[in-house]
Each structure stands twice: as structure tokens, then as C-alpha cells.
Length: 260
Image 1: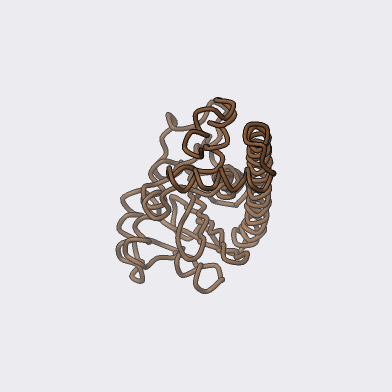
Image 2: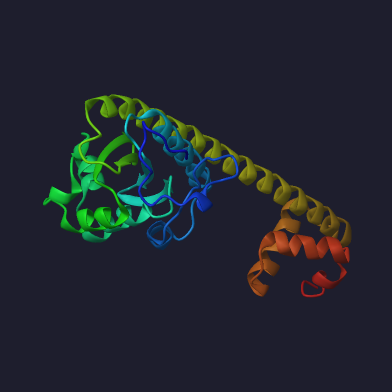
């Protein structure tokens, strides 16, 4: 991020953590990993959408010198992006204390501002961390879509800089960010369904081929061949597809010994 007369140096700014094209890097703090374990296919694309939202906020919102965005699902944070590596600590402070502007925006659905962290007494832990990071004011907004919500937090290095003009732009951005996350989620679910259907088709083809081997070797019907595979599956604690693969590899010989 470049600085100039119209923009303060961002809180926690570290030029070494910017991507080669100057865009902010995505940061995923431990709080998201600890609470979710692993992301679903739908959520795996969310950080890219959040990173774009953060970059747009820093560029477009008046007086914004840093930003963070969090995807919440069923009341838990599952993905986070920030314009600077120190900003996730502010979100962690809110989650650990259960108090802060982001959480208030998430509960109320209304923009929540902190005009001056030096004089803030509603969220002591948040204000302390913010001052340590060089944040003097902040603005948080949330936009819900079903069980999911996107929260956008804006930060400035000077007090009382994020006012009504900032709210108007930020509301449009967070609504667009939620739409981006929804599209990414739909795409992820579609890809997962595609993989499941493909795996099912491949499994069916494998079992059908093994049935053909058994029909030829035993002179049985297709239903009887399938029953033979199920018996082996239960007896040897193997999946039917694993049994089918062994039958095909051995052309029925080794596996059929236990049936005769």
C-alpha cells in the first residue's frame, strides 16, 4: 500500500508482507483453524473472496488505512483476510473476550464504530490491542446470508476519521463481498457433488466388472455375484470396491478360494 497526503500509513504496516503486485496478503489466524479443523470444499474459496473485499475496502473507503474481513458460519469464524499481518490480532482479541465492535455488528446487523480507541471504554481488551497496533478508530459492518455472515472491519491511524461517508461505501462493499462468498460456496458445492458423482460412477463400473469375472468363474447370476462380493467384504472387513478390485486383479482365482 502506498502512502500519501490523503492516506495515513496503515496500522501494523509492514511492506515486506505485501504481494509483488502490491495487494495485501491473506492471513488465516489460529482461531479459525482451531475452531474448524479443516474447511469444507465450499469454504476453501472463501479466503480469496475475503482478500478481494479487504483490498477493495482499503482502496475505496475514505480514510481507511487497513481492513480485515471474517467469514462466520453458525456463529464461528471459519476464514479471515487482513490487509496487514498485525490486524488479525484485533479479531482474536474480540473472539477471546467475547466483546468488540465486530461482534456487536454481527449481533445487531448495524454498523458499529469506535471513534477513538484512546477514549474507548466499551471494549477494554479490544481498545488496548488496537492502540498497540496504532489503530485510533475503527468501523465494523456485518452482512448475513443464511447461516453465514461476512464482517468487514475498517481501521484508521487517526481518530474520528471513519464517518458516514465511510459507512455508505463500506455497506456496498460488504454486501458485494457476501455475494462473492456465496458464489464461491455454490461453486465449491457443485465441484464436490461432481466429484461424488464421478466416484460413484467409477465404483459402479468397478463392481460391474468384478461381477462379470465372478459370473464367468462361478457360472452364477449377477445378483449372486454381488452377494458373493458382499460376503467377502463383511468377512474380511473390506469395502466392496476393494473386493472388486482384487477380484479383477486376480481374475477371480485368489478371492474365490474362500467361497468354494
